[in-house]
Length: 255
Image 1 (cartoon, rainbow, N blue to C red):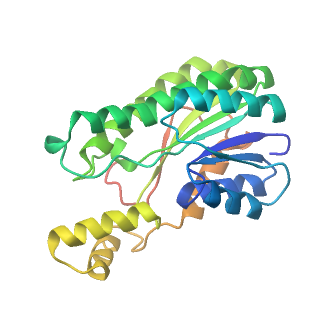
Image 2 (cartoon, one colour):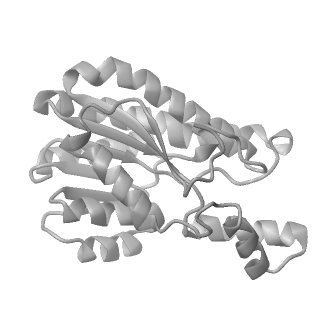
Image 3 (cartoon, one colour):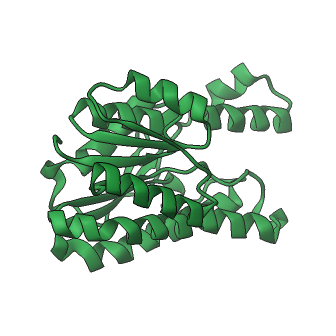
């Protein structure tokens, strides 16, 4: 992936950090984006290769983000690979979710991804090469209990991506979704903690219960999800478009 530039959202930890390392190791220049500058600077300093950029910005500020990314494009050139990777809405039953939670979730996922795509498409089209990859959730196939708003927003992202895939394919651009299962990230730790509290169990007990739900009997490493993202970002995946790829150890109970 030499001479390619990737924007990785949520790159300060977890799957986003792993994706940044994977793409940099394959030769990409990486623009690593998240809210925490301190964390981002550490991530960027550890990336292999040269020319990587740390971009500390809240994706909720779409106007400010567009301005900053326009400046980055002027300095480093077009973005060829867009990794949409944003933390999910807070857990809870959908029947108890407040309107603001839906609005914020839609804005930070669908609207943000759409804004970034509009900004980057001209450069992708000019290069004849573009990869838009959304790290979402297996809930687009089977809704996950107690993640009502997340299930809704992730489903909207998947359908946005499928629609976009058919519109840009002739330009050498693909749009795909990677669906992580239970992955050892800070978000998973928070979900396990919340489940343990609800059910009156210890975190260790709940962790083991959740592992038993996975045929592989373990959680994914962020690097394993990053490897799937990197493949879809590569030229080897040029004819794979508009798909949902679970990386879940076989947990999702459908084809």
